[in-house]
Length: 288
Image (cartoon, rainbow, N blue to C red; front, side):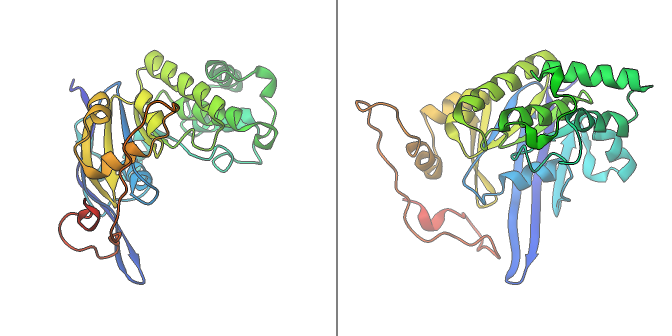
């Protein structure tokens, strides 16, 4: 079996706007190794979250290929995709907005199991939900509570439990800790890391926080206006970035030391519009 679980080839996603065609994702190519984490970083609006949704076919691509375990899933029918959903899941950024406020925690976690008919009766279903809650560190006493009764960290644990309920192989993590306090962020990241080791998960970890992705990803792609401008193993990218945009992003990371000073890279120039962009490099007008 190939070590590559996911590959995109010339992936594109365009949106029609009153001003023209918005190139949200434009000719994106990357691979993710089985059991590894690919970090996808960039500023807001760079297309990283759209890429994650297109990969899962929550949004349909305009063009290109999405190869999951050797098969182009863009060719899959709706029935085929329904089955594949069990192997590809997502953890959303906002743990409150992504949970149904009218459902209890146990109902939310049980929902994918019910939809895909994974349990033969209510006893098996309840046991599975209880086990999932234990795995993600949720007390059994929270079973009949509602999302608004939980803090952000516990809500995100519910989202994680729901995502792993069907034993997926691949999970898109769309800024899963950006809405949480720093202390809670560390707990959630540790949980996700433990689950990856225990369950053999592969992550596509989308974030704007380079300090987070540094400690969580095996490889990183940097996106700018819908395109990948740099891809490298995490250590190499942080020690020796090659693209000027990557250098600017890294120089903006706060350094918790008065003695250690880093040269700031200040980008100048006009930002290229993603609507009907000119041919060539999107970063050209801001390149030092």
